[in-house]
Length: 94
Image (cartoon, rainbow, N blue to C red; front, side, top):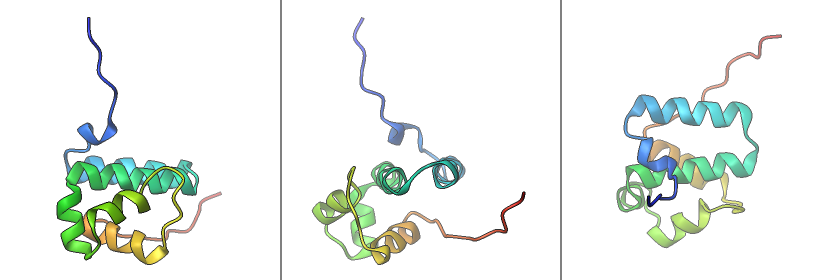
């Protein structure tokens, strides 16, 4: 039996699934995990499409959204907008 490497991007096939995944990572993850998750989402949608919508090159996107990267906040916001997401702040419940 041959196995393949698990890739979360293969399962991010709807806006609802993308939102659920990203919200979970935002709630539970650290900075690095959030950046990596946004990279998986961009990969699921298509880096070429995201590059065109953000005005960034594909290599720049791969570099900015790779594990351990420290992208500028403006880059994150451009990518979130391109993937159809938005940031929203809600009061934290006790």
